[in-house]
Image (cartoon, rainbow, N blue to C red; front, side, top):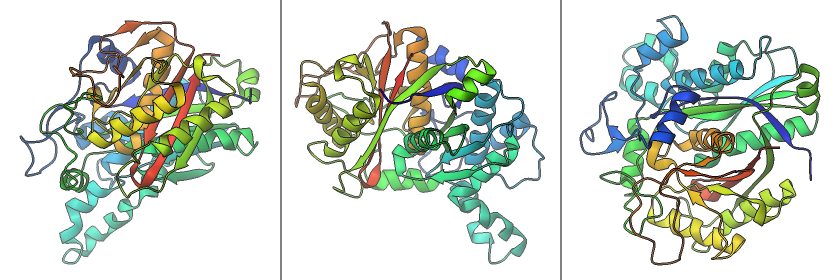
Length: 399
């Protein structure tokens, strides 16, 4: 088995909670965060439900104790909240004590600021200072600056697998001795751009999303941020750190099938899961639970189900559920929040329910876990698949 990477801290903010504890309580109590849009102007308010975090930008600024006159995007603010919790959870007092980096991911970037000021840029030159906030890397730099991090900062944007690839990249940087410690994850806020874009693709539901249900109609968009702290064995031993879990496997692949759709035979998902198992050194029978990508779109759930059957066999697919019915699909943050959920599942020996499921899909005999279930879990496989064929799989282990 290859060298595993220790996870020593985690932080999260989503529509079901403003920290790890609140998210866990919502997951255990079946409390979802899908609601009507309240915090940004859109003609879809009242018609399309999202996983919106019910904290305004002003409240986030106050929570973070930032100066009021900043041009920080909502994506950055959410990322700061989650990254701060992760660093504190890892017991880090001097963030630059070791070779430390930040690999953050986003797909929305500063779109909320761009939408707000776009038509003012020409007539009001003083507003042009906000243009830089649009760039995806701007949020990463803002988070690093907030944490006081002076080391390596990088940004990944591979659609909905972004945070998984950030976690993977962080692990490789540690394994190759480039960094001792990496804060990894993703952050995305809601915006008109993404809401209108997904609506144009006709993959949004007009109600609540129903992953792996035969009558699924599409996804609910959400916003969130989540980060993990990865540390080398040397730092863990030297600091006598408590390890929350280990990243034991990872893999990514691209089937280059379509700009937005997954391939019919789930080839990208299949290759990503296969590679993650190879890296981990585990057998497929060792996987106790799968946190599926499970977007509740007709294409994804069918493709992912076929890929799981190809890996495990139709009668041997491990117990699985999608947590997107709780949070909505949070795009680049999805793999980050689901990494936290995967670790919480292991720590608490429970499988979180796949909400809203009623009818088994007609194409295969797969039924998700629909009630909170006690189970000793040693290894969780977490899937994240994005537009453009970007497929990534992570495996988290207790030891």
